[in-house]
Length: 380
Ligand code: SDX
Image: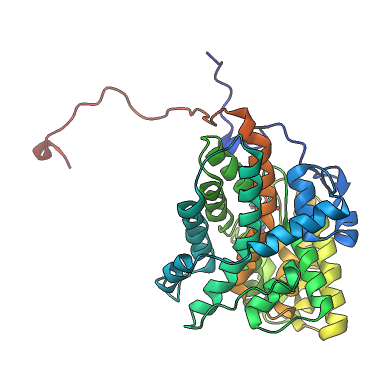
């Protein structure tokens, strides 16, 4: 019988698994994927190469990467019955709810649970990495009553996704910046959605249900949903002059400032630094965005007021400005986070399934005991 430990709400700072996938040093602002610094991957890698590294633990050879990319291209299309299902979704529905529903629906077609079969595992990885972007883009088209734009096999992963949003081939700089955004969002140790994926996969269910659990968790504004809220906040602030009063009001009324703070980073999130650079690169090529001036002032004031509490910009603060410049609608920002994080969720799923051990924490019971069952006339 395991001894009951002290009650730690939400398992804060409690290690729940051993993992070799990624490493974060929150005091120094370090993030590594399989030991490689995020800055190097952002500069030199692609999202599919990084996905391969995260899931199988090694950088692929040229041939292995080409084979992986071809498998992804081959599996990009989604079943027409999933598209028909999406036609019944309300056009006012949030794309994260559409994604969670359609990710689970994949399990209706591919749910065999041969979790000890490396071929099945690879098939599930390829299908999810390939089909999630198509489902995100399909719902965007279909909720406006349009037919979904079909994926193009002649386009690379990020170019194809941006093409499926607009039916226009993006500028190479836009596709490259977007691909780096996917690298930056791919994995981040034991965050809430990854933990959700692991709890679900610990019951040995199919990988499609695992991803559906994780998508539902990522959708919340305290987690992946913050990127969309940041743009709404910048819009509400409206000008550089309004930044300081806005922040002072948040602090007085203990309102969380979206895009800031982190359970692990107590310095600026290294991903925010890279995303800021990507935003500036886009502004140089595609024109300035006045929201960036507001964001810079906001970051300065928050650091002045809350830096002493270790509250700095996180990954969600600048990502929205990049997507906005790429012309992506704000309610697709979190689905894009999900497109990237499927790589990390699947890496943890593959690393953990051999454990064969269900996640089942305990609780501290604070309720009553031995209460009598009362008939209606004795209640109220
Ligand atoms: C992601 O875990 C991951 O790795 C997540 C992620 C990933 O890649 O998977 O990095 C992605 O989710 C980034 C975070 C995106 N969320 C937001 O930007 C939402 C705003 N941020 C906060 O909600 C908050 O910072 C959290 C949820 C991210 C972390 O909160 P914690 O660690 O639970 O901190 P806390 O709520 O206990 O706050 C500690 C103190 C409190 O003040 P006191 O009551 O002690 O005086 O810091 C304050 C909080 O009020 N605080 C904030 C704040 N975040 C913390 N005050 C104002 N604005 C904020 N954003």
